[in-house]
Length: 238
Image (cartoon, rainbow, N blue to C red; front, side, top):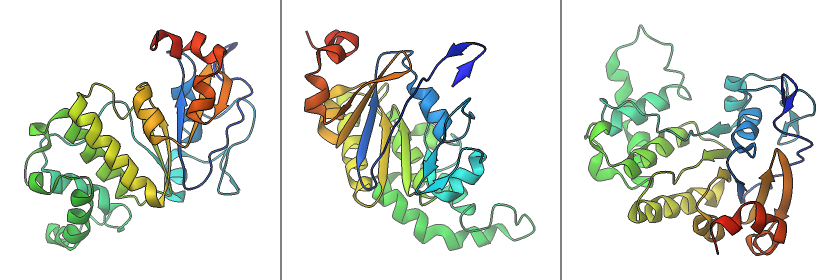
């Protein structure tokens, strides 16, 4: 990916195996978010090809990629603050249920989504908060709600952009357990700076530095690489 002569991502060949949790890590400015934007088609690569489950998605639009089952979350929690937890998830369910554009139908039709919505809410541990406005949730629970709304799209592959950013220890443990549960039947690619989370959750780790792949493999393999320790991990583990 080139921006007016600056190459932000260069010769990155990234393979994510189905049914795994894969981490993309690296120092600030390494190109991690740019890779996410390329995969979800918020950016179109200057050169190269992106395939998803055997299909070339390089020229597709973000909504088309999402409909194929490749769905992302963002660093900043994106929920409707003044809607309840239940209503946030019901809104997300309207798209796969073909209700999003059927504006002429009674709002009571949304009640048909309640069972599925409550199932998702329960899956992320928010059942007791279902009727609470999202603005009243703690930061960690807002992130859990965002994951519930993302799961409403029934993704085959979930891209999580720094899901633990800004969280306290208790929330980190809660969201880690949630990611572990949802990864049982789908693929997860995550950008994450918390290396304890990466070592605990991820089957494979790819390290980026200056827009290129520095190392790739298990956490033990990449953490033992002196180039990785110098570029990134050495700043966190003396």
